[in-house]
Length: 312
Image 1 (cartoon, one colour):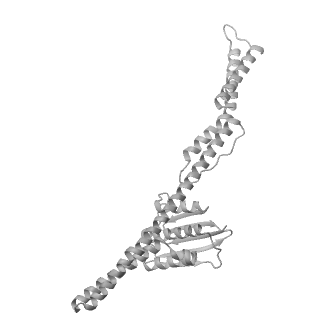
Image 2 (image 1 turned 180 degrees about the vertical axis):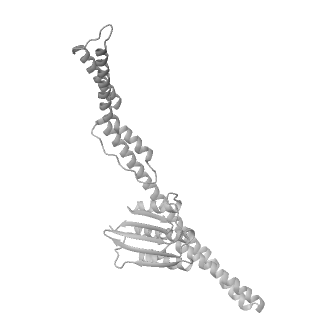
Image 3 (image 1 turned 60 degrees about the vertical axis):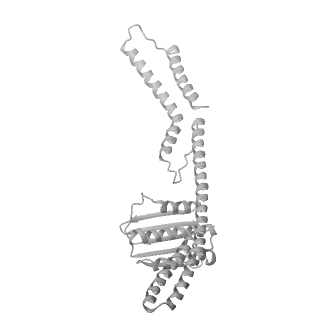
């Protein structure tokens, strides 16, 4: 039954009952109503309104619940499902709302997965071009500078040596960026070795001290889950280096029950977690793709990023 017809029937039933009560009951209204008759009419009107309100409340309550929930739905976070009521119109409305939320979240997960896959493919392509094109050309330049330095006069050889050193540093930067874009050590040696290389590279290019703790005997995770854990750790370390001005950073990878927990904690200046940037949103989307849970806490004493992913 549609909600419109149910409201109409409820109102009709209440009015019909009131009319029948006036016709069949021992009530009458004189040409000049007295106080008792006015009191009876007022009591009947109040009873009619209360009965109508109680009957309509149970039917229209799901509408208010759905309206409140729709006002709080955030496209970037998982929405709560409403409990299905017993009444048919309310049950249809709540069921339709829950199905709509399911479709929205499924579509969002699918689009995010495609976007992240395209992002990883683009990272691999850029890393390959940096390694094959830019890296090879800089290597040729280094060899040429070395030969020119050997044949150049003494006063010019010093300048060529300095130029060769600058070129070598640029080649190292290109290789480092290529490794960040495409972590080959992750596919070759596993997650623990990839995190070790990540923290070592972070310590080399940052003034903060890094402490790494990886529990032994961790189970092997699927390739997509390992990639998510690595990217979250990479983003957390990048944020610590760029924004927090931390003096110490700690990265840990442990097992908690049937889940693997990654935690990156720094002692730098915190930030307002309500103002998330693209990096934090990307971490949340990556965690959601592998059924993970990402929690972020930040304050004057530092920032903690914790990611938990299921083992199976």
